[in-house]
Length: 234
Image: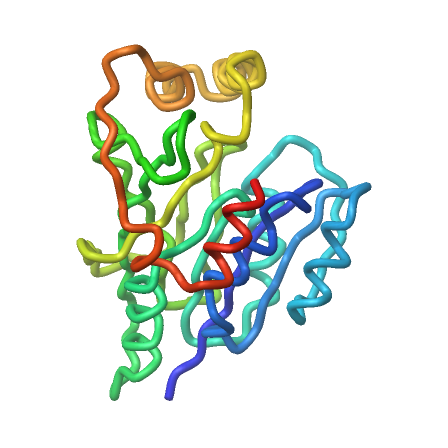
């Protein structure tokens, strides 16, 4: 049996943190959370789920925060999830399969498709481009020389992976549903300053136009009951 660390960075995430952690169904051996100075109940929620909390004042540098949890990993695999995301049952199944690998690998990395929940309904996600092409490298075999680079839209550096696409599991992203357009406009402005080359991508994702196509997903079947109940409270 191999082991997995679930890792995340958080800041005032009390509204969604429990959703993210409930969706993982305790599939991890360790939970490492880097808190950027939360003033709400985020750390209490993280402690309830058995997290090892690293306190590091938020500087605006995502890589800086993520590198803190990489330094603490002691497991074979790492799974990354953000506080405003949750995973479906197929993703949990993938994590269990990875743990049952008979042989250790020296470089597998799984890309998992992220679905953006509609701004209008929790039962719909955006199925049109570029939302239907948002592959995320969130599950990888751990190596000590790994590190993140870039302040925003950070990249994992330091090892030559065998990249695999996991086409059935999904990560669901709540950003558009939870934040208003004004907040998202400000976010894009910050991204423009820190990584000008990614401005167009940020515009497309965080500021959807009227031509987006929505698709309904089976909330009752695809996620566990605890996550469903927490989502209904949003």
